[in-house]
Image (cartoon, rainbow, N blue to C red; front, top):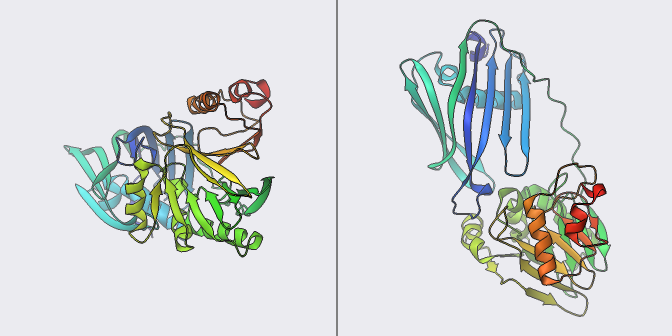
Length: 375
């Protein structure tokens, strides 16, 4: 029987902040602290409920997981391990634990030493801190700790089966320009730009596996053209995790000055990582692309956007997500992008991005941001 089943009912909240490296204005920090709350209930019948809410700068993520005691799947065991580390009583059955450590491996970040420290007042744990290779990533306080008694109300339900993977597809945006849809899974897209003797990919998101699938789709379309460059718009983890696959394929990594050292440290000395100035252009008889640094923005300090003047297409990452069904008001980063385009008098007819749908611009971006059918 799982050790958690032997415990009396225990419920608690962890309330604090996540110090996220990938959400910092620059790779080296200072790190943004995003409000974070977890609610845990372990029933005396072995049922576990784990609810998580994080208020990111641009959206709120929420999840709820219910784990039944007879579920011995790898996913359930991993979820139990996460819950067990959240409270020292779940690790030791009541003995006082001050810290635990374990190792993990991230495909991009490499070997990680993870450590949790607990602060106590008397026989009650009062604070929780988690570190990743010595860097603080989660700092929280315990709230509403209850032992035994009636179970609290919970909103969690059985998790739905994961959706089928979204297929990678090349969608033509203009002459010699394709959007690589689902290049990093659902709602993660890249841009493919064809030149006379090579290809350029803008953005390598999510994972090396996803990037390999995108590369395979590119090879089917252009079997004889090498991918010379992969352009990184900004340093957030979900936008760079696919880079190792492109580097293995022979591509160099193109980014801004402030991101070179960070990406080089992740990709290793064999990877070629270069910085380009704002306004850097690549042109030949077939195509033209200009990379601009649109930062600083509310999202990150440095962020490249790719402008294709012949097709009048602009590709960007995380500054604007076009969702015609959304009622949210324009975010500050979208307004900053609109101001950037207006200041440089860039004529853009199609605005594409890593996330969301392609927006056809019939007027200035700022004007369309506030149009009713685009909110």
